[in-house]
Image (cartoon, rainbow, N blue to C red; front, top):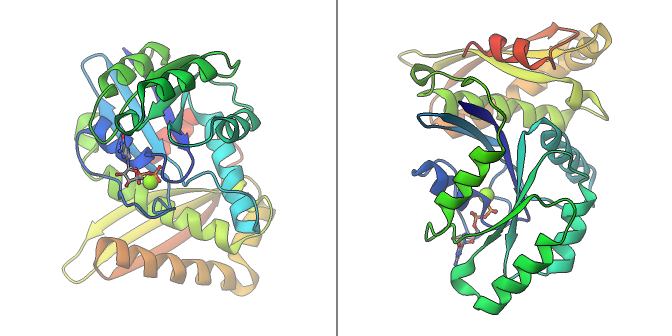
Length: 288
Ligand code: GDP
Ligand code: MG
């Protein structure tokens, strides 16, 4: 059995969502020709007889012009560190030098599959030039040519991913998978609001666990925990007289209601867990 986490990186419009959909065989991410439609990391899980791949799609890699964008860039970097395999997605119609600059600046330590996308709209020479260019780079472990929208090369890519994944048991069992996307989305929405509301490094020390997601007749009841590592961080998340967490709850609730199309009763709790980054604890706490 091979199991692990895979992150897909690439500039806005490189085709990350399209690739994820193609890998999963169904539409889970929102695909749109507009830039930056994927606002949250989306995690989906592909389980086969002898493998389980947990994918995440990230917001596009953005120039760190604004504070928020800088934070997003940080989020991209830290999710890279959490992955077992990284996919760098390159739109074959883009500039090789620009892409190389971004990819190399990420300083990735996990195996990288460089995926050349949109081969259906480029000449064979152009694809070959890109392949030769990236094959020579130190940070690249393998190059795969695909057309995410046509599905070409996608099964080769999956084979290559599985090859690079560590040996191990599946992280998630089948019966827990049905409500996973929604729960993850809800968690990511709350996480995004934490990035928006709090300064500096606070967002990196906080994780969100959606503990309860219950559909009642008139609304959906959601209980989520924000896990931090220290009491001082808990104080900052709460704010004076709970002012900050109240604002966080309101912002998150409005967006969750939009996302699931129902009224939401959202309860947020802050817990101090000095070692939440320990992955086993993290997964156990998730309840999957
Ligand atoms: P993301 O921003 O990286 O998630 O990119 P999307 O998946 O939303 O794709 C951006 C645009 O590129 C959409 O219009 C897709 O239909 C298009 N696209 C993605 N993959 C391919 C491909 O293999 N070939 C072609 N021709 N278009 C693609
Ligand atoms: Mg996208």
